[in-house]
View 1 (tube, rainbow, N blue to C red):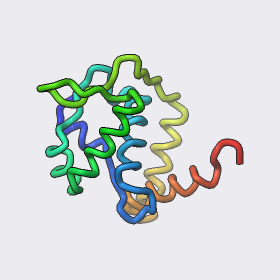
View 2: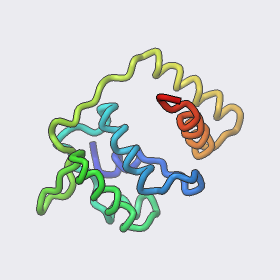
View 3: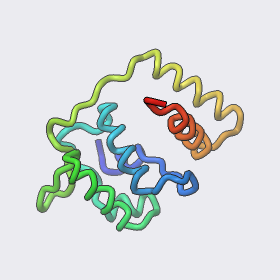
Length: 132
């Protein structure tokens, strides 16, 4: 996957109440779980991501550093950040994917923006966390 394609995987919402670096961490992990980013694959540079996402490069650096501490990413000198080997994803059940597609279609038909859709999902996830 090209660097510009990878950046398109991420959708950050500055008004969600969740810090931008945390959103980026969560979205990178989710992209790995969904096999959209694979072990050994290089992430875009801090500068490229910051420019494409229109956020401060320090925010990207903070997210990358946290993911490196967690063992999700590895820093390779002269190359950049790579997804660590041993990070595996799984295929999404087709029924879940179909439901998600229908949900997004309905939300857009109701004139919700992408940011509104993401916020709605995040709110429901936080309301329905495991153990609650």
